[in-house]
Length: 243
Image 1 (cartoon, one colour):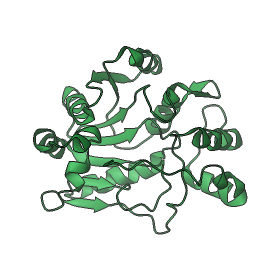
Image 2 (spheres, one colour):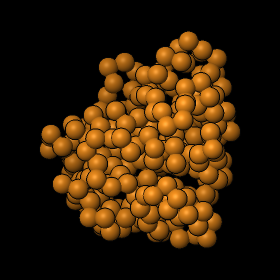
Image 3 (tube, rainbow, N blue to C red):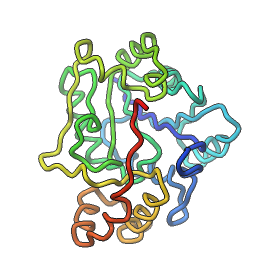
């Protein structure tokens, strides 16, 4: 079984353009995402899936500098891009991560992958029923499920967001919601706005040391000790997937 992490990344973010190339401690957000994923158990490849737009040449160059695979595809049809990236690297299992999650946690990913591999679910996610902070998002699904979505999803929203076709057809796919015993979904640790950036920058300055990976529970402890950090971006509303 070949498990491939596919990280979608592009420069053209509407709310915070170029966010994946912003730097903390001399490293781009994209590099931090890769660094935090690298120690995940049960993965075989990491692929950056970006677009064919000239704007994203910098992402291709950064992926090469990091030393990870890169795939270029359709800018607007992200499902097409994901399917072709997974197919190119012969994935049996696809782990979907986005480049706006520089606090992604390898322990959560490892546990989710282990659960997926030990069961017969088609799709395992911690994003549909949220109990983890936003920004620790991961979806794990079979290449077969991705292929079914690729050939059958027709609405623009389903093409733009990769997995809605799967989790909106629970009668056709075996779906598992990966939940934390305690609900921490009120916390927002993703990077989509300047307020998010200010929070993430502060978290890194509190916890990061060169080449050291800290985990989500370390961040949780920090924010519980310093609740003013949560207030930085608590008012930000997430864009709806099917808008």
